[in-house]
Length: 257
Image (cartoon, rainbow, N blue to C red):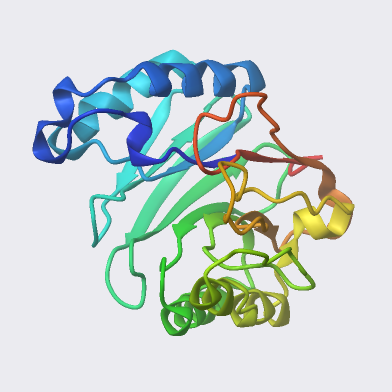
């Protein structure tokens, strides 16, 4: 699963004093995720500041997940939290986070052992540049170096997927030009990464649901380099009352069969 929490799921107040901010929305988000029981989870905008480690431990407790890591962002405190539900059949063996150029926020890389799977599986998580198509393309080019590994890659891509044609009525033209740049998605496709949502035929938008003048497109996506027959399912979580400006995305992938 991948989910951009929007401001860490916290409301009221700003800055380093986030410890006293209202976490009602975060608790509701975690209740939603707990009901879905992901084995692998990435959270973008884990904006928990100086309290990041303790907040992540609390999130893991709420979700009943056993392994956590926080990849620090270069900008605006938009850290990426990664959680794994370890078991006898799933264990973390290593972690490597890239926190410098070309990644505007960060790139998390978690190496996993999965029973029944030969070799290591990499769960990677990102949060692409919010306003620069040039940087997003560079980020995708860098991720392409992992094309020969077994990878599940999730991210808030901040740009449209291949073949999208959203309604742009009333949307800022500059935003349209920047967000509908599909070169990063094309770069991943050329490197052999499969867009899981497109593969199963589910092209539901993950943003644009919070009001008029918002661009609705598949901002949050899941990719894999695993064989296509390992993809079992995919869906975008459609909450009646959204808890973020992004919707969670889920993929079911049979790795160790």
